[in-house]
Amino acid sequence: MTDLPELFRGFDRRTIDVGGGIEIFCRIGGEGPPLVLLHGYPQTHACWRRVAARLAGRFQLILPDLRGYGRSSAPPPAPHGANYAKREMANDVVRLMEVLGHERFALAGHDRGARVGYRLALDHPGKLTRLAVLDIVPTAEMWAAMDARMAISTYHWAFLAQAAPLPETLISADPMLYLDRTLASWSASGLEAFDEASLAHYRAFFAEPARIAATCGDYRAGASVDVSHDASDRESSKMIDVPVLALWGERGFPGQIGSPLEIWRTWAHDVQGRSLNCGHFLPEEAPAETAEALLQFFEGASA
Image 1 (cartoon, rainbow, N blue to C red):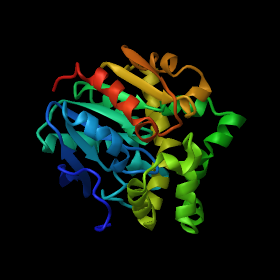
Image 2: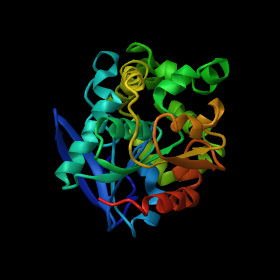
Image 3: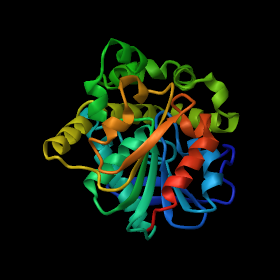
Image 4: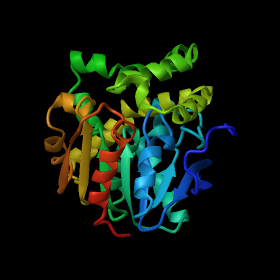
């Protein structure tokens, strides 16, 4: 992956030991209070390419590759994907930011990165100043809303969570076909939503068997450990105590199960948000609108 296109000129590259044998790769650039941007499946930090330039004048941006993705460590998945639970990934982010000297920070996450973000907010109260979640509702809510229509559009939730090595074997037979189809089918405009430089990054990481396995572990956790963590918080009436911005695509996943704002308001005290005219990949399908919404929301954040 050394010959991949440079997407964040002027940003530093860091690989940071966050403990437990995990190293997290990240890009760091911009000036201002710290803002972490977390990507989702099946992508890397490259998904923020079109948004970062608009935010770097106001914030110091930290763009990690999540555990199992991109250039970060990808340990073999434990049973039920326990080492890819969002709690573990959130701990990676907290430790990463502590190493970088930030005790408090703002966070925006898309897809799996947003699941890491809200888990971090629940598990580590006081760490976040503000939280933006892009095109998700909480994991337990997604599973509770699963019906025949949702099962077709979000089939990957059940498929990737199947016991190893079934999904790994099937994906590995033609990983580029699977990756490109996934990106195209979740976007309102197909693969045209993604520039070739970003696609090169996604394809390079997704060709690696260890990372295919890691991402399956991520979804196995999403069908087991992550649900139990959500259920525990519901039972104890734990709420997110920082302002939350929820953005979703009009043709994305959350809008299919009701009002995302109403759902998030049962999980957080202070929620605002709206839909954007796009599919699932807000940072790439609607970069200007996404950046503007994030700028307006995070302007009030302080580290």
